[in-house]
Length: 292
Image (tube, rainbow, N blue to C red; front, side, top):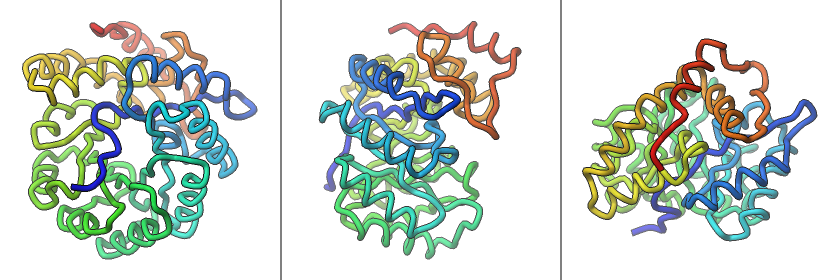
């Protein structure tokens, strides 16, 4: 069995911005809150972190800062993927050099590729570093799915150890679990499918919801993994209205609003994303309560 980077809840952390750049003092507060609440890992510069509108210099600074603040207390997984293999390699090497514990590599978007191209792309990046790698399959954003047979091929690469499965296709997740078994850890990439994916052998979630409620999401996963399935299922079902609301507009628009509402100063998303609509602000406000 390959190395497991984490079991439980990995928060896909939002990036707090000011008009001038990254709000590092607020980022420090967010990281400390996550660790205090028992999160199992932090994913930096992913989709929820708005990496697509961050400069290379900002991404490097945020990754290095997060590693420094976490100081080994939880694994820091850096989002270093992209649709340019050469640039993804450069960013992955940088993340490794400043002490990141793992990498999250999204499928190429816009230019896309074939399944064989995916194998070549991810393998080339993996060969450039020693860090464990989590693949990220999110066809709704990239136009590219990682097929189960492609997962099997990539699971043979020594440091490709996991996949964040956000296809929404439970049958596909089951097929990946069947083909890859212990050679590829599966993390749910959708908060509404945490328990279903755990039931297929998954070991956790890379979560948006846990930006707000890391303890709740951590305990949901741990309840399932320790045999308290009924409680885990109840937590999953009770969270569904808020989970749905957090995706009422494009992520991370709603969660950044929600973070501001619970006391953080995240600012607003960067264009082309915009501030949450008034109607959906009311919706989020009415749901910001989960039993901890």
